[in-house]
Length: 129
Image (cartoon, rainbow, N blue to C red):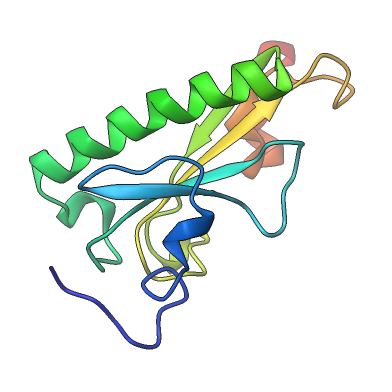
């Protein structure tokens, strides 16, 4: 398994993980956008989510489900946004693949319709054009 000594995720103290398995681990985001915002991170240092093996991606999916269970028990969200910023053009800032799990709550924003489409505000509100 490839590691990068300069990578914050490769050096993370796994004892602080919410859940983990042989393929990765989950932590709370240090700069959460909502209560319970988590990251699912592969053990393997690879900046490109699409470059991860199928086996690793399946392992991350298992973690995603375990994180959801933890969030349901601890935060009782009303919904979720799940996202991956893959590449600097997509806004990826930590060049180690990871999945954002963002719990959503009724009233946490004025109008949640369109969800992740709001990365392009002029194109997000397609239902009123």
